[in-house]
Image 1 (cartoon, helix red, strand yellow):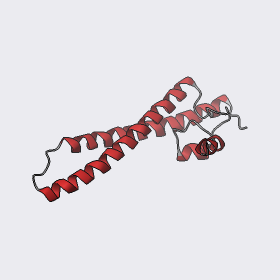
Image 2 (spheres, one colour):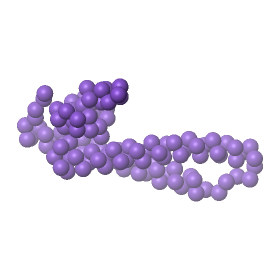
Image 3 (cartoon, helix red, strand yellow):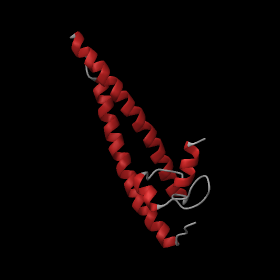
Image 4 (cartoon, one colour):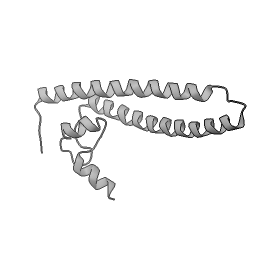
Length: 119
């Protein structure tokens, strides 16, 4: 179990909060663009409409994934505010910086995330 001093914890929170806020802004901008694309008039040509429908499905999936990630980021930012960021929600151990570098909004350490995937 890794423990951090108050100063180390604050530095981690500051670093990852900045990463989370940047990703949040990126996703919000991307979702606005997706929404704008959905609002555009549709082509009258049958072939073009078929392509547009396929594109709409992809955009819809990207939008859903973006919304899901935004919720996870908001939860992570809440954990920063509450002082519990970087602590595994399942076992209470510190989440490694290596894991947070890959998935900064994760509430689980590597071991618990792996165990949850195999339930």
